Length: 624
Image (cartoon, one colour):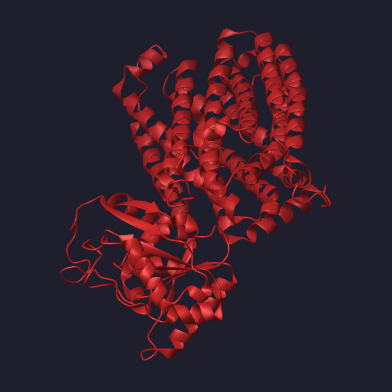
């Protein structure tokens, strides 16, 4: 598998990547310069409280996302997305000219208006940004592409925040003005190289009423339950992240006693963490959309958020406020580790969710689904500012606010996972094939990217279905013996993955017929169905004869049949070698190497039990 970095060399990705990176960089140079100016030198512009401004101004930026995202999503589905990217960059130039004048004239109203208009311009670009990726990247490249975009975005946030804060302390208002205009011009120049991206629905009638457009967008997004809940999960991350980032300036100055350099340091380690976590998703997921990483991210957001509270000193240490003085205290290193790990957890959390939305939503409505995501994101981020104000009014300080957010993150995660057990299933599967086993695969490109098919495989252990699930990009509905559903953990996992229970005719003929009906319905719906034609787990390590059920399935619904073979599971904890399964823990230790091998698909009329048995036996070879 090639690294995601090859995309940076390709015309279909590089100009778009640089355009969005420079936009994020400019946004953050402007915002950070403004917030730093108002936090550390507020008296030169206004008499308002720096803490109040630090909480309210991010809300001013994201308010347009809430107001205009639905209409912008329609626009991004109606017009060429490359053209829209260039239009947004021209708008950015106009907005930055206004902002530049605000800095030079020390005009708070002009700066706040420019901040609002900058949010409006970003609202138009947002649906273009995430709808562009599935239009130009293959499904196997989406995780890597999203990882690059997210890491690039947060590194741009880091660079913009560092540069913006540095400009306030080391440059004039004219210098800040020149920088934001120059970055806007550079973004427009790169946008000219974005390849044509034809609109999926050019005949669509735009709804210019923001209220009805927002209502319709949200209604459509809620029609796909998995997409909607993933969207809510992303929005919760932005609630969490907005709570942290909005308080970092005052946290650095009033709680930690630091200057602008300490504020920049906190932003730096958080952004580096998000970038590292985002890039790691490609490696950890094996190039496919692996939502099993999302629970890892959620756990990290809670654990490291809680530890950040306990690591924050109750008494401000004595030092000169410099970065060097800050780093001399061991307790501060613990805080920095917590913040960088919070960022990494955020990257693991958010990248798979974006990729999941892009692959599960209808391509013709991709921009409108992303617009719905932006609407809900904006609502959560505005909610973050309001909740922070309420909690401050109730008497909480900033470290206590961080603790409350981390604890509530655990509640949100548990709630989402009860609604969508697929997240928990993928989490368990990921752990299984990355701790108990080391899984190698070959020939899985024989499994069709879309459309119905039956997967057949030898049956070696109780976790065969989970291993195959971990290796395949597409969800598979396995036909399983009904008795396995009584096993506490495995039963829950198989029910969560919508496995189809089956029983012998002499034991439960009604359940048998229901199983065949469910298989036919799944294939008619274009799904993959998994089958273990032996009908039982081997107790000898050898392949038992294949039963005739596969013939009945393909006679009723003629589809391709893909043979697979598992190698290396015989003798593992979950196999029946030398007695009952799951009776001898760590029989072969951790990281035991196993393989899943795929062969060419057979046509329905050729997929006889004997032919499939021969194919699977050949794929397995002498490796049990």
